[in-house]
Structures are given as C-alpha cells and as structure tokens.
Image (tube, rainbow, N blue to C red):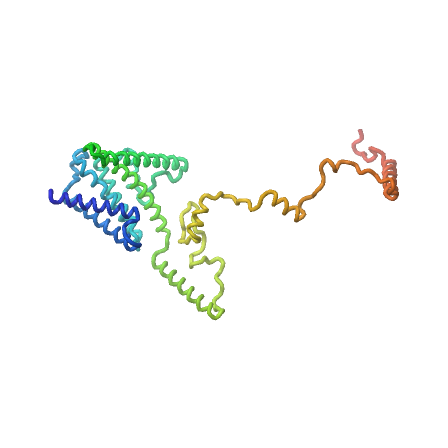
Length: 360
C-alpha cells in the first residue's frame, strides 16, 4: 500500500493539472491536440479510480469519519471523470451521454452511502433515480416555483464558490491544519454534488433533443441527396439551363420533412440549422421585442406634409367672420338673394308645421 499510494497521488495530481489546462484552453495546439489531452485526462482518472478500488479506500462498512482528510479528495474522481466524458466529441453522442450519466450516478451513490448528501440533494437524487430521462432540478409546470428554485440554487452555488475560495487560501498557508484540509475536501464534494445535478438535467435535455432527431441512416441519405442537388445545380449553372423544376415552397431547404420545427411545449420536431453570424446573434440578444423607430417625429411630420396627409388651417383664426367687400357688387347681390330666399322659406314653412304626430 505504501508503494501504491504515491502512484495514486501522482496520477490524481497529473489528471487535475491536465484538466485545469483543458479548462484554460492550454491543452494542446489545435482541435486534435485538445482532444488528445482530453483522452489522456480521462485515462488518468480511470486509472485513479482503479487504484482506489484496489486499495479499498472506500468501504461500505466505514463512515465518513473513518476516511482520512487526505483521501477525501478521491471522492470526486467520478465527478471529474464525468465532466471530461461529457465533452467527448464522439460520433455516437447518445452512448457518450449515457456513459457520463452513469459516472455521475456512481459519484452520487458513493456520497449518499457516506451520508454526505444534504436533505434537499437526497430528494433530488431519489427523483433522478425514478425518472433519469426527464430529470429536472426544478418544476417544469409551475413557472413561479421553477424560478424560485433556480434562484435558490444559484445563491447556493455562489455561497459554495466563496467558501471554496476562502478555504483554498487557508489551505495554501503555512498554518493549515488537518481540520481545514478536511473541510476543504468536503466542501469540494458538496460543490461537485451541486454541479452534478445541473449536468444531469442538461444531459436529460440533450437526450430529449436527440430522441427527436431522425436515425443516422436517414441523415446520411439527406447528406447524399444534398450533395447530389449541389452537383446538379453546379452542372446547370455552367450552361445556364436546368432540367429540374424549382423547389416547391412547402419543401424546406436541406431536404427536411416539412411541417413545424417546434412543438407547442418547445420541443424540436426535426433538425434545423441556425443561419447568420455569431456576432449578429450576439448583438440581437438584448434588443427589445418591438420594432424601433426609423425616423424622428419631425421627420415623420415633414413626410406626411409632403404626401398631403396634413390639413393646414383651423384654430382660432377660422372662427372669425370674413368682412364683406363693399366694392364687390356681385358678391353683395348674391348675399342679398340668399337672405331673401331664406326668408321666403321660413314664411312658407312656419316653425312646428312639420310636427303632425307629436303635437304639444
């Protein structure tokens, strides 16, 4: 055991260092280098797990008080391993997600056996074991309760991060004792539990999306059909003619099945591609939901006036009577005839003569 412990300690330190470099983007040059370092880190953590099993560091007959402060750090091996597995860019994504989920479950089971799960985390673990495929840390029906749960979990995550930073600084000091190291490793395990439930929820959501995707042979056929279509378009473009008809408006681009993209509850019904640059999408995140004005109020009034949509005049000036022009005899005669015709009408139609049904 004395010969194996330094090997375990060295393997774990090397795996942690490699994982930190991967998270900082220093794992290797290019995508292939990053992927290779990711594989190496996974292999080292799996070797650590095998060494822990050979040494029997964690026994079902022991309690957490029986584990030394130094060995408490190895409780999170499965968590760190699952965090790397879920990042694998494998062709069979469903198998990768299933492997990561089993590793997360193994980690939670180990901590539950030692009684390191809180009351709330134990309820979440039981809920996960009942329905792993539809697991969620908050209610999916009551939006108000879901929001409160998300806020509470965010505050808990922030509290654990601050506590970890404080304990890390204390553990790096010269006066750090065994009790502080023990508290640091237990806090790391609590933070890992918090992150594990969030990852399990994300895995369940991704598996739900993958379940709605068409099978792989169908995707291969669509890719082949798309390549043939591009080839035909290229041949038709050289001579300026084509023997094929235009694509029907009801048929989506890329050979899709047609119909709506999302169901009523927001679940994707078929694969789709987001178009546009990332910069344009990022700039449109915080835009308002309504259309912004394209001109000022003064510009709008000028445009309406130019189109004849504004009637000028009115106001107090319109109520003033027009003074007659004494020199305009024609207008004076017209006004006289109008007044005379009005007098004759009143004489022929006295007031109340038309009221034959309701005489008062």
